Length: 345
Ligand code: MRU
Image 1 (cartoon, rainbow, N blue to C red):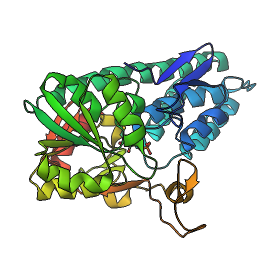
Image 2 (cartoon, rainbow, N blue to C red):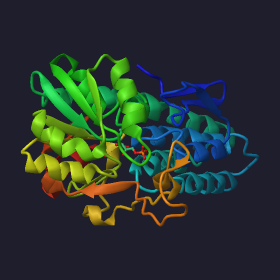
Image 3 (cartoon, rainbow, N blue to C red):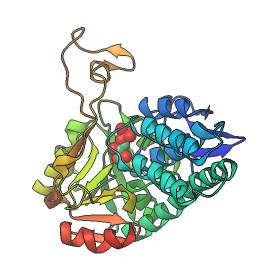
């Protein structure tokens, strides 16, 4: 399996996902600023992966701290947390990873600054290791939903490149590999995570993969008899409304129309129970050039006005089930989400 993120010799190494599939290259992040930049520019992306990267970023941000008191050190930790959290607003996993570390620092007030630095690095490593097990458990739980000879459709990239292991939605596909006949991958405009990343990793893992443009999904669902759609998530509200890559909402509507089950695979850390519904999920608006250009080349009128929301929200009623590492939430609503998530968060 591809190792998207790894800690080597005091630096976070990560695959530069902007270069894929043309070039496979690890880049070192040696400072919090490097990590911020990598997250902002989608060099590392996908909700769980940015959760892990953010945690290491926090360590890198305080590793050289000269603070001598707990107060001085804590202020630096909080400042760095705020800085990294601002790199991307939608995926809750980033804030989740950062706040896990901050709480640990708060619980260890009596320890020396050097000891706290070690605790922070240890926690970042734990978050990475835990994500591996979470992916595997999610994969196992979701595999049972996939029928024999399954024709599947996915949107964006919720695979190894988006996590520390084999992914969320794609993890389910890898776990059910023997039953999977074919996977259609939406190209996922504007940044083409499907065309550049998903098809690359599915093929690498021996999955029969077909790339389609986003606007082909409806027609493919009908003509190719798609059995299920499976996607990842960036933030899930208490009632099951799910934010994921822009276009996911449209795919869910198409799946409902064609009576195709629509599954979301996401770890417990992707749930934000502080938000009652998906209406309050902050949606990142990205640079308009992502829409105006493809491969650096302008494809429209120069300086054309565009809209570029990176995510949309799929209402819970369009979701057949949410697969988590702790179990499956069928027909998600506030009650059913609570049953699985509240006790596990
Ligand atoms: O903008 P991106 O590429 O970070 O968006 C990623 C997605 O929308 C994924 O589907 C989501 O993060 C789930 S990843 C396991």
